[in-house]
Amino acid sequence: MNKTPVKPQGCTNFKLRQLVRRVSQLYDQELAKAGLKTTQYSLLSHVLKLGPIRPGDLAAAMTMDASTLTRNLKPLVAAGWLQLAPGDDGRSRSVHLTPAGRDKRAEAQAHWRAAQELLNRQLGVDNVLALHDLVDQSLERLAPWTEGEGDE
Image 1 (tube, rainbow, N blue to C red):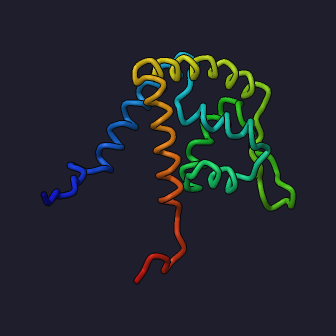
Image 2: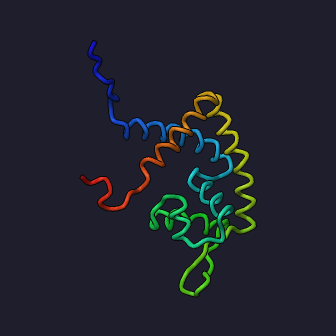
């Protein structure tokens, strides 16, 4: 018997975007109770973990372009949760978490946990673990490659 290999049906990008939108809706709905969007919670969490940090380094750590980071920082700075301060050399800046930002992040963390627990229940913990593993493997395999790599 000659078996034809099974190929994925549909567009992988579209399917992933659908999943990301659905998961984002779940997290956004829960984090809204703390007055934050998922992207804002993520920024506060990254600055807490990595800060004080230069904006360019923060953008790289979050796999985000600099202009998107700048746009996303503005409301957090305006709310007093993050502060942009002079950097080491006077020409650069660094992003700092303020005490109010630390409090806001702590408040939002309980809502993030609730969203994660709901996702675990909806999908099943084994599926969430498998999804994490698949995403990690995929990110590693799709890591940016240097120009010319893979050309034959």
